[in-house]
Length: 226
Image (cartoon, rainbow, N blue to C red; front, side, top):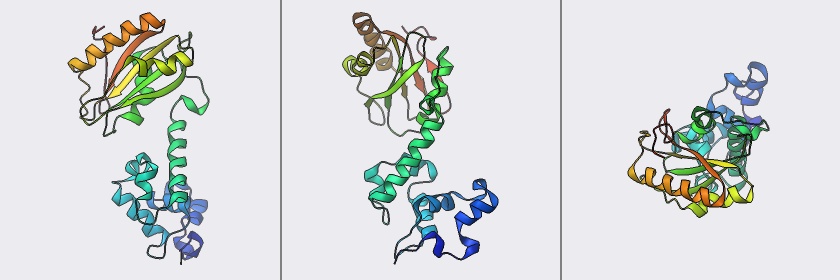
């Protein structure tokens, strides 16, 4: 029989503690318990939440997991997994332009600030394309490629596909180095130059290419690489 949050003794109910003391007073496990609501026959809701955090290496691991990874965890079926995915997406939207506010890029730091929290701890290289209009306002941010621990596959057609469809005036490339060191490689520099030339052909300017490290970033434009 599943254990629900309301089945816990009153002093242990995270929902009532939240109402009385505020969300900030709850542990990560208790916050997850409020979201998931029910445990399993094997684990009470608080034990399930605590085990989920432990097995994924903490809150970041839980919120970065995909549907498959979550549903492979004992006690997490599709409904609970989608609840977690929805919360993770809301958190991402809260801290970037998709919350509904216009986000204008006036400097490399503006672009880096937009994605730093999302990209600094990724275990694989992700190439993200910021799509901008004529006022340098970000209209979309799309993932163009997903690489391995040490490389990403970059092709101009993948980079410009969404930019063309969205009538972009310009783009900014951003990718992360899982090592935490944002120093550009030779491949990073050569790929950027290829994209720059391709942009001239399709009429969409490449404004910059940023490399995200652990709380640091490098602008290839500022460094004079293209």
